[in-house]
Image 1 (spheres, rainbow, N blue to C red):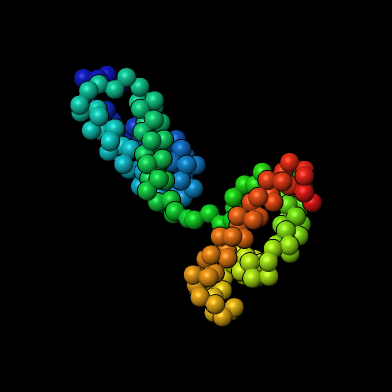
Image 2 (image 1 turned 90 degrees about the vertical axis):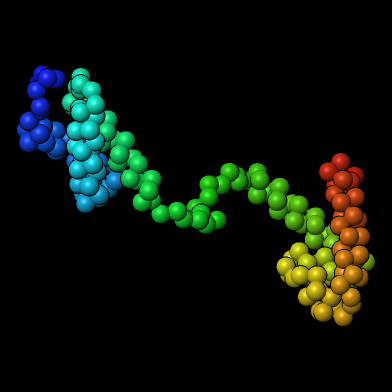
Length: 169
């Protein structure tokens, strides 16, 4: 095709339409969306031709089909939250073993806390109760819960330091 002459658009669509449609369909997974993209591609190719000569119609149409299909895919792709089951995990047998050992240690260490601190810590972290719920359960003020929880965490942190050094069991 010469750049001086108007291209035969019917022949152009016949020659390249199936390829444009195939590319768009593979990217989008929908023939209906691919047909819309194909129309957009040929309309854009016409606008580009009017602006400057086209070196390779096949190259231009393939590139436009790819870019426009990707653009459309980005617009129509539903955004979904990942659930915990969808997230990749890097937890292996060693990590599970360490977690089990630490959980066993924590249960033992909580058992060595003063009664009120142990109860508050357990209700907060194992029972997942709020400060107000723990206070209502134990019949104490929310401030007393906060104070006891702070002391329990401090005691457990100091014991964890000893545990990491291998000095405590």
